[in-house]
Amino acid sequence: MGALSSSSSSGRRAENPKMSGLIPKHTVLEQLLACVAYGGVSISITLFNKAVFSIYHFKYPNLVMLGQMLVTLTLIKVASAYEIFEVSRISRSGLRKVRSRRARPRDPRRKKATPLVTD
Image 1: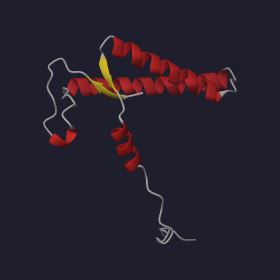
Image 2: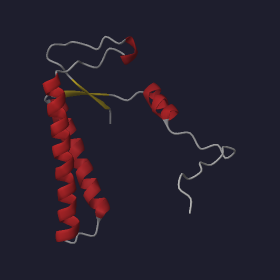
Image 3: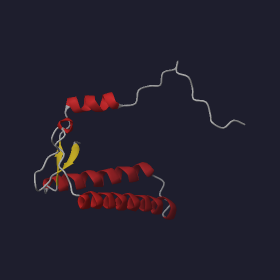
């Protein structure tokens, strides 16, 4: 699965050279609509999961998660086929960047934090 990047009708690109020139600029309205859509979908999934597990007493959470991932992948494929947004391929160099940004293991010699409140 690749990284998602929305296509802009105006073709404007980010001016920051560190951003690789692939991120289109969006209006405040587009950004606000994206936030509202994300929030709506997030709340809907939460309510769906609550209904499935509480009301219908479904006992297979991994199956629900698999179904949700399959629906998501299908919607991404359909949206990219209709050029709603572009799905780029993941390269080996991209995977190395993600791997190098993962949290490093904690140094065992480092002193543990002391609690602010003591008994």
